[in-house]
Image 1: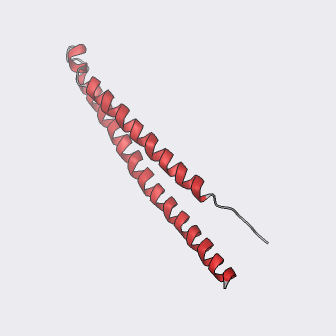
Image 2: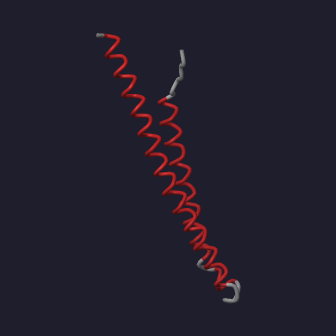
Length: 96
């Protein structure tokens, strides 16, 4: 017989941990973007476009990462719910 075990609480903790880490990255980027506003003055406007391009690139990468994480987390939560429903259904059948 095949068997497997799903750690539902562990999955929930993992999803929450990922959300916290992405939020932390967002805060770091917000701080970085604040610092970057002074770069044009610091480099006498000679490298402004380079910094603006890089800033746009890392902001876009963060948005993409957040969107993927949200999609995958929702999928993970759906799977977790399916297993919970299966566990509950199995318990109901066994108890009847």
